[in-house]
Length: 429
Figure (cartoon, rainbow, N blue to C red):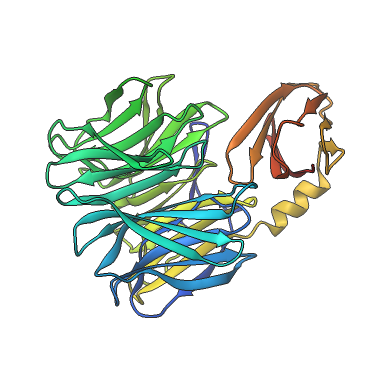
């Protein structure tokens, strides 16, 4: 089996024999699957993608390893659905909503679709966000703590990086970087202070750049300047190390590269793979896993080798497994690969050292970690959307008060030395 990369801190592991992948075709109706994007994984997985046969934006919903809704046509007005990005709001106080940013090829505009996916059924609104020139390629959408969409994208008319934010009543649009031809291949994350972090490609200087909002201004720096560097970048956040990490393509050498750093530390740069021409369409997930397209062999590296597959790959992690959505250009299909974790789940159940009681709870929980050496354990609490809510460091046990949290489903993730374990926590009224 070829290499699938999983990043643990800054240790790069290859030949992941424990990662067994199941592969399925999600949509084969025409030439479909380019620009595919999956939202953050919770109860279900929304997947949006381009229908090249009809020039439409489509989406579907996965639940329990099968399609529960769709495929649906989201936007059929002209040729629409390029450069897609998807985010989902799992809000216990309002309907679950999928936000999809995308490019309108016909009008050369940035558009956004808002889909009420639960409860019940699939009310959809599509609106143009920016119509000033040729704008909207290379979109990336992310929700802030108010569950409002923020979008980074490229202004091809002026060669600028732009940023649009929904403030609750209207879209606020600004230019982030105007120094040369900049703003291709954007990737956006929003931190807990609602400050956007954007990685993007500088086509003038062939560099990978990084912009972050300080609260008063945009701070911009270069991450990597060695050769033609930074296309197909993907940004994510590691809550354990409190750093940002980005995977990206080195076009000069045909390599997959990776950088870790951000606002609290300088960037450290690593070359992950130099075997053939690799690193296009790289995608890094919330757990630090990296997937990419192997141009030399036409493969989704380490996962799928049947035909020319793996372009537009999007890697997400949720439900204790990895999910990769990608395009099969041989057959014109949208495909999905997911990790088979049955063996891992059995092993965790047999060796479980984490105890949480009561569960469900209304107010307080007692957490116990059965580590005989008494070393410090790290516990993180995530909501159903995968956003970190709390973090605790303790030795053997502690009591946590959770009465201020909204009732619903949460996840506790324990890290103790090299041991990791997840537990679902239900908070009741």
